[in-house]
Image (cartoon, rainbow over all chains, first blue to last red; front, side):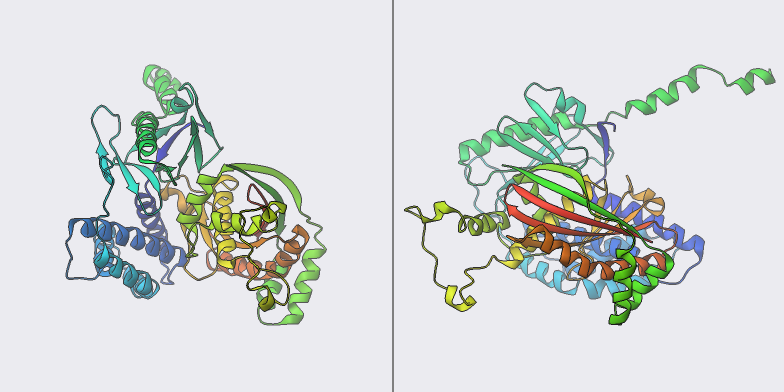
Length: 248
Length: 230
């Protein structure tokens, strides 16, 4: 297996999946609601709702519409195509499924306050200077974890480059990969997030882990295309095909 | 702390008749007995399938990300419960927790079921990703099954990729044989569900996966996998 893997955030993955499933349903001219489409819509709406709560809650802003309505509105606009009208059959079921999670998120949003962080430990920090792919470092104080999230859609995980670093070790054949750096274990999720636990760590150690996470994320995220693609393209570009020779 | 997850797999390829029996078995007990006899005759037994090594931090993240159980630090809770059965429990400094033993008829304290379910779902998510190389796209809330994954490398490939429907059962301080018994009793439900899903979407290859997770020690978890396809 290649150690250079494309990263798809859960949102991008689900949007691509929904578009592919919708195209197939359209081609089959079926009017029966597809449970897989519904599952993807529910997951996507949850992702969207969490994003809305996080952004608006941190900014201290509250939209007059409910979180669920905002999320569904965003998804509907993103998936909109003039020739596709079949989405309407799913919204009612998605609303029904997400009624309680949405109300829970509403109450969380109302109570969301920025927790008092220890001096020097920012809750969120964007890293974009001197890196191939900009990323964000997030401190989830309640879970006692630090997370690095890539901010660019089209990028890759370069596990070979990580493995090549002295003292760093990559384990696992597939997600979740683990990167062992000194005594810390960092987990790489399918969405490209790098997570490290800081449970019961003193502040000085948290700063050290944060620095290690920054280094790992900087090494891991890349915009480089997989090498095997280049190998396939090169001969075609350099050598004319036999049929062209015959024609001449 | 590294955790070893040992695997035993059993694959069941159902015929149309067996799939129909599984569907009928959800509402008629006689058909369930027929289904049990039919799959027992297939001689598809559990076979050892190696093991996985994951760090405790990875499993903790997996529980947080994919479990629907609302439990704080499931690993820590089970670790405490398991420590009660350790001889070191009687050393000075351990709190004697005999308070509620009279209520369970002398059976002793029992582990928090939600905690075990949370760890089992976390282990299930790791297996779905590492063993089946699938991406988890949905965790139905208080619904069947526990996890839905796809073998698609990107969202655009979902229509041509295998789909996994995973249901997870967890137990702590029970034997593997007891878990086998539990899975044998549950397999018809997943078989019926997989067969129904395959009928609704014949273009997708659908695999139902029933996972039994037995937590023996916190660093040694035994799992049994039954893969059902029609």
